[in-house]
Length: 272
Image (cartoon, rainbow, N blue to C red):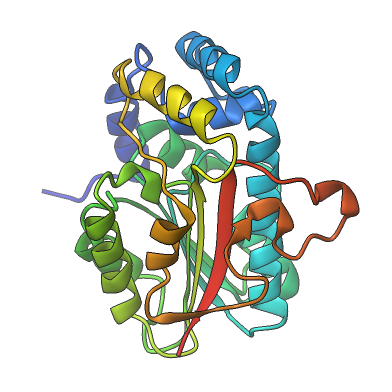
């Protein structure tokens, strides 16, 4: 039997698409002003905003943090390989676009477990001729599957930047989250980097807790918030680069208008 074609794989993904249950990537897309979401995502997204009206600002800040971090890693740290786990729906300044503007030879692997995300990724996230862009469907709960799939595009003998924006909050147990991050870091050499953003209790804690309680009660994949101390544990074994673990809007902002504290914290670490 022959392997399935990309078209067949895309059809299979669409058949598994749930449009009756909201999904975080689609709600994020809604808050960012995109069009790749459904009525259920708008309803749930609006309800969440009734708890924390500032969340769209966090969504924008998170995307800008990704762009600044990737640009720093490619331009200043010399990273040419990126493993983007929890890709989300394509938007402006995706990882490969930012990295390949610095060096067209950069290689990027996108990882997600949502059918609509992978379908859009295959259609929209293309590469320069000099570099490569790969896509794998995998769940962060199974880091071995992530690493196996990424090895088809990335060389794990050379430094890799592992980016996990807004995805570790779906690993409910902090000890498990730490173990997953450590397993991923064990697979890459010294000089590799880790980029994380995560919703936190440090800003608008009570409102955020109420929003997450609502989210967890309406049928979507459950998520959790973490304190600064819990988030710091995710960076065990790497050297946090200045300014450390901060509101993601305050990680090396390029515009003073960005320097407003938001509900997501972020950081970039280097493996020693």
